[in-house]
Image 1 (cartoon, rainbow, N blue to C red):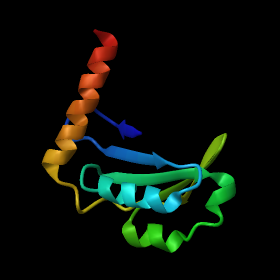
Image 2: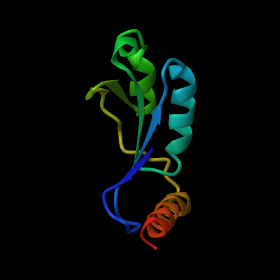
Image 3: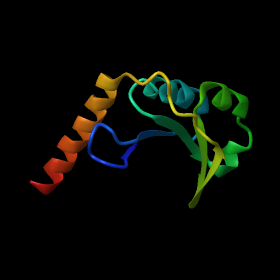
Length: 104
């Protein structure tokens, strides 16, 4: 999932990788997202969140969300220093295109 606070290239872009059980794969995916977004999260069921090694998330700068009807931020993300402006622009443009298709 991608969230944008605006549809220009100066806005904040957030990615969320949601997994039921395989949080280690989600961390890898979330890390790759750091090249295209400002902040990256992994979302897991609340029951699994307490069994996850949060040090991995903190060291990578990836946020961790526990989901069970409500969403709780377990680990705050750090703004990515790896973001490549062209990759971020691609994400924003892809979102704008999809939104345009909804309203055409």
